[in-house]
Length: 126
Image (cartoon, rainbow, N blue to C red; front, side):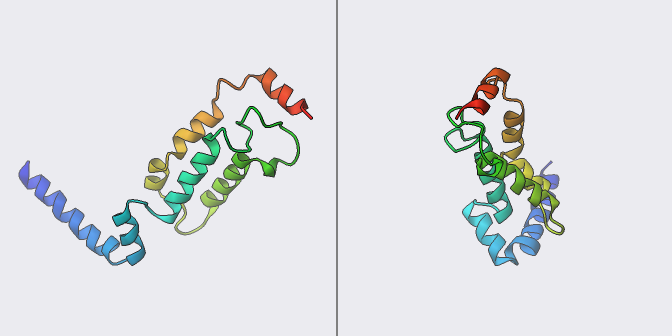
C-alpha cells in the first residue's frame, strides 16, 4: 500500500512540475485556490442561475416582460452555451464538476416552487 501511495505521489509531483509549475498563470491560480479563468467564469454563471436577488426569471418579484436578454439567468445560459461551443481549451470535465454549475443547472431547470400559475401571473404583470 505504501508503495502504491509513493508511486501516485511521485506521478503527481511530476505532473505538477510539467504542467502547473511551468505555467506561471496556472501556478498562481492553483496556489491561490481560485482556479482557472474558466472555472471562475463557470462559478459566476452558477451564481447567476441561482441568485434570486438578481434581476432574473428566478426572482419572483421581477415581471417576466421585456427583452429576455435583460435577465441575468438568460444571459448566463447564453454565456454557458458560448463557453461550451468554444473550440480549443473550452471547458474541462474537472472545471464543470468543481464549478457548482451542474447543481445550479439542475436546481434551475427543476424548480418545483415555480408553479405555472405564478409564472403566468408574472408574465402578465405590467
